[in-house]
Structure formats: C-alpha cells, structure tokens
Image 1 (spheres, rainbow over the protein chains, first blue to last red):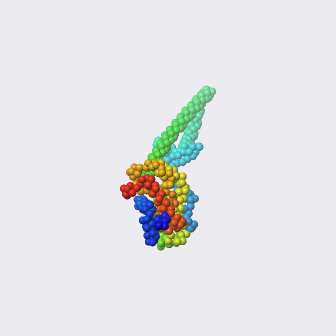
Image 2: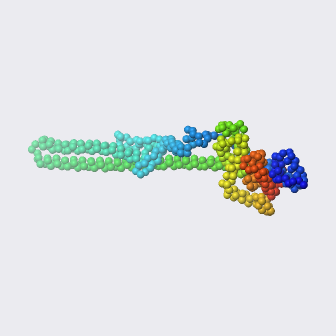
Image 3: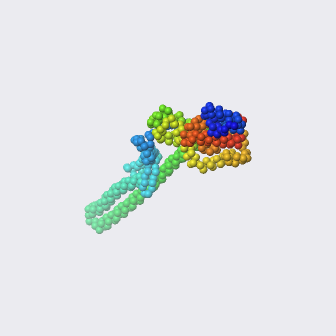
Length: 288
Length: 197
C-alpha cells in the first residue's frame, strides 16, 4: 500500500515544483487512488479556468521623484503647507487686484454706505462757469460719481453760486448808492435852480423820492432773492435727477455683471457634469 | 538586479524604471485582490511610495520582487481592515443581488437558485471568476494570486509573507478547493468555461 501523499506535495506537483523522484512518487500515488486523482484533475481544470481572468491595462501615473524624506533642499520650502497657503492667499489677492484694475472696480465707503462701481474713467459733468444757469449738458454713460463725489460737486457749485451772488449783491448795493445820489441831486438842483422856492416842499419831495427809491431797491432785492432761490432749487433738482440716473446706470451694470457671472457659472457646471459623466463612463468601460 | 542595486543606492532614474516595470503587475495583483479599480490604483500608488521611501533599507536586492509584493500585501490587508464594514456590506448586497452566493464552508448545502446562463449573458467569465476569488479568505487569496498569476515560487511566497513553504502550499490548496466549491455552487463547469473562453 502506498503511503499517503500530503496535500502540500499534491499542490507542489500541480505547479511542477517537485523533483523528478518526488513527482514520480505522486504520479504513482494518483494512479492508485482514483478519488485523489479526480480531485487532482478538478484542481487542474480549475487552474485552466483561472487563466480566464484577464489583466487590466492601466496607465502609469507621471512619476515625479523628489528628494528623499528628511533630506534638506531649498525646494522643500515649496512643499511646506504654510508656504503653500500663504502663496495661495497672495496669488488670490494679486488676481483680485488685476481683476479690479481690468473691470475698473471702484469701492468707496462714506456716510455708512458701501458703494461698488465698475468704471474706468471719471467724467465731470459739463457746467459752464460763465453761465451758471446752464445746467449739466452732457452726462457720460460711464459711472463717475459716487455719492461723495456728487456731494463735492454740489458743494463746489454752491460755492461758485455764492461768489456770483456776492458779486450781484455788491452790484446791487452799488446801484442803490447811485440811486440815492440821484435822489439827492434833484433836491439840490431844485434848491439851486428855483430860487426863492419853498425849501420845505423841496425837502418833502426829496424825502418821497428817497422813500420810493428805497422801496424800489427793496423790491429789486426781493425779486433777486426769489430768482436765486428758484435757480438753486432747479439746480438741486437737476442734480437729483442726475444722481438717480447714475444709480440706475450702476444697477444696470451690476445686473449685467451678475448675469454674466451666472452664465459663466452655468457653463462651468455643465462642463463639470460632462467631465464627471465622462469619468464615470471611463471607469465603467475599464471595469467591464 | 543591477537596476535594483542602483535604486537602493539612491539612483532615482533606476527607481523610475523599476516603477515602470512593476506598476502593471502590482496593480493587477491589487485589482485581483480587491476587484475594485480605484482601490487597486490607490493601494498601488501607496505601495510604490512606500517602496521609494524604504528602498534604501533593502539589504538583499535579489528579493526585491518578494519585498515589493510584501509591501503590497500589507497595504491590501490594511485597506481590508479599514474597509471591513464597507466590504461586508458590499458582499452582502452582492450575495443578495446575485441570488444568494454562499461563502465556502458556510451552509454548503444551501439550495442554489443561481442561473449561470443568465449570468453569462450579463457578465464575462473573467468577472465571475473575480467575484468568486473575492469570496475566499484573504490569506488564501493572496497566495493564490501570487502563485497563479504572478508566478512566484513557493519559496518566494513564503519569504514575502514570512510563512513556511508548507503553510503557503497549504493555503493554496485550501484556496483552490474553496474556489472550486464556489464555482461548483454557481454551476460554472467545464462546458461553460470553454464557452466563456
């Protein structure tokens, strides 16, 4: 009777890792033991079956070998996480500055209000200094004014108007003096030209003329004040309209920018979906 | 082994060539182990990163292949442990979905409703075999893959896994038996195999 052959030997025989003598011994054993021989045949078939598992072709990643861990190099600083974070923040800041420059971003904070404007040029409303009554003729399509800038312009115009009014007042005062002189002169002429005339009547006449002159002057001043007030009101009204138009223009531009950003975002989302779909498909292809 | 010697001495170009030579093999080893492309890719990359970090410590350059497989096996076991719950769920669902596939040794007399014809229509034989391979115990699976697909000698397998040759042979024997049992349960017989191939 043949001695029992161990499973280890059977396996070694199956894979051809036995010496000729040992292999002959196992072969003889299998010839004399049909059950073990059947089992061996089953294992052989299984080995054949296992050959049906196919290898997968895989793309090798790009190999970038750096220095061994622990070794020092100046380039190691680029692998430092803190450095990477600082560099990223700096890069974002620089990109932000460039974008602000390109888009003409104008940020101002005044009177507890943050104003965002997109503009490259600042356009000053055209006001003729020679003709202060002439309103703003042209307003650029560009947004040039924040609220603060508008206030400064209003102040400048008011100062200019004050100067003009001062000059007019001086002119009116001069006119009053002239009128007073003229009012006095007839009385003198009358007293000189009408000898023996009633001095008291003449004085009475001069006084009346003087009163009339004063009344006239007062009316002129009042009329002038009313006119100036009306002008200033109209000026403020024009500025209010101008300010409103600027705000509307700002809002329109912001809306346009937001719309553009939204479109870009949608496009990016679509591209991302397509890339993900492509990746999923690739993975599915590789798996099957 | 000149390439390995150079890599051990710190020649990065030599190591790059080693990676190029071995990447495909290690990947397929891992893929057969996990039957998961992404996981196999991840473990392969980890294997080569570890190899790069530790190749200076390799004393016997003739055992490079075993050493590399040992790293891969360690990462495979590590991932196995990490994803233990996940894998359990995955295989359970697989079993349910594929009409109650059973692990060998457990409920071997379970009534099987698996229809191989339907399966052949849906999946390639390679996929079925991979699924069967995924069900045998990890230590048997490792030896089986190393022997059957990587063509390592029993001595090399024993060295890589730090076990005796007889233990390696024994694991392979039981692994093959378990696999055969699974395939028998699934009624994957000789005819289907020829049909599939």
